[in-house]
Image: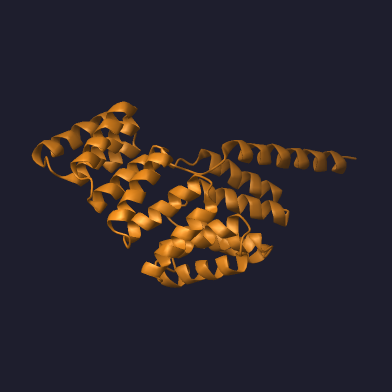
Length: 260
């Protein structure tokens, strides 16, 4: 079913999930899948109605609330996701998934200080949660806040999951923020070679290469970033396009200077 959605055959995916729902009418996970397929299919109103029906059916089931919030995150309805996750935290204050998602939603709402507080709360529940360590470290490195500590958090996440491409990207980006561009390039090249490397990783490597003076290769990676497809991607397409234009202009200027 996921393969059908990725292949944009959402009509067939919807037929399959509804057939499964007819057999397993009380399966909350399938209900959430149906809502997400409807959203991807473009029927947003029906998707929201389906996910709200699921939420109302199990208003205090944290696993259901997390699934509902995940739907709202993918639909970029972050206030709805926040509302749902705050209720999940009231029901179970130590639910790590709910805390992690709440922190992520607050970060997407540009409320980084509140997000940091929630992530630190999550670390009191599970100090060795690699996803939480990585997210908090990356968020603070990206905004230039306590970057040395951010680096330590990311390094701890990598010690727990050494081959995770997202964590390698975070480490490379933290190194870049600390102006350690050689190390940044090293980790980001490893990150882009990992399966599932997304547009943001490609963009990060482009930025590092531009800083190092490898302008043509930077343009190559920025261009790849624009072509990469990933639902919910954080890539700022306009900013990447601007970087490409500026880099190409600098290459053209350099070519003009070299002409006899």
